[in-house]
Length: 118
Image: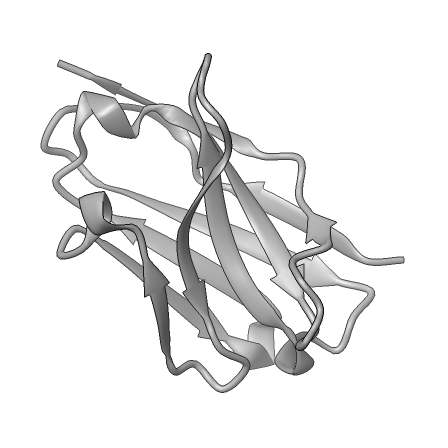
């Protein structure tokens, strides 16, 4: 059974940094495209960043370009989201997701809360 478990969320002041981690199990990790999504209260879920199976650059949400970096360590079955220069607008529940191309993202973690105070 595929499981994705996020960690690293918390409360941080504007301008600070956090690193989110997503540990995967129950799948051949290197065969999956990985992504980070977020959902703020009253808003729809949006994709933040994605990374290919080999670690090539993928999609980045315009509002996080230059601030967030997605990476993966296939040997550890883990994908990361380094978040720098955080803004209150980044406050959301952040979700890890996996896709086995050409399929869409269909495996999801339970999410981790990120709160950025002004």
